Image (cartoon, rainbow, N blue to C red):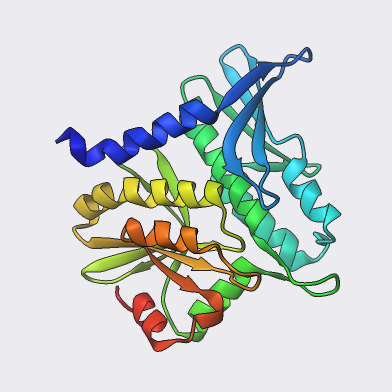
Length: 258
């Protein structure tokens, strides 16, 4: 029975072996994580405890990094999408700083959701050149709309470990459903997070919904995708669609599998 969940323990070993913590003089704790941003730098979370309450912060890194790359958040469409996205994870935008308030008891789940939010916002913009900026998540939604596929955006469900996971889209059918995340860029950090998320939720979701559950990654391949990441998805029986090939009949079939 335990062998069935060995992959979960391997994931935890990887987290424990690559995470770090350092107490700062200002009362905050700097927590290094193995999850990579789009520059392949490890994400850092800052935590401060006051009594039973904990504040989590990215110190303004994620949003200011997007601004430094020329992304404008003054456009209503961008700002509304960002705020909607953050709200779905329970995160606030305070002067471009991502903030979450939690408690000692809720810290593990909150930390998990906060890292998911950092990865998601980091990846939500597609930078094509210095003058043309589009939101990849928006592009994926538009594609699903074009195909007249009924879906639920920002779908949240609880996995077998008790953690809650947020998927960009869910497509539900009578006998099966598909959990989808879009990736502007794919790296080791967001790949590991996605595989853990959907594989953890798979068994619990199948029992609860009495349906077959599949995971699907829709990947922006404008600048190429490392083949080893695609092989990793396939090894975990996870489907993927390269966005440049989204209209290929075999890829459309994946979306209609539910």
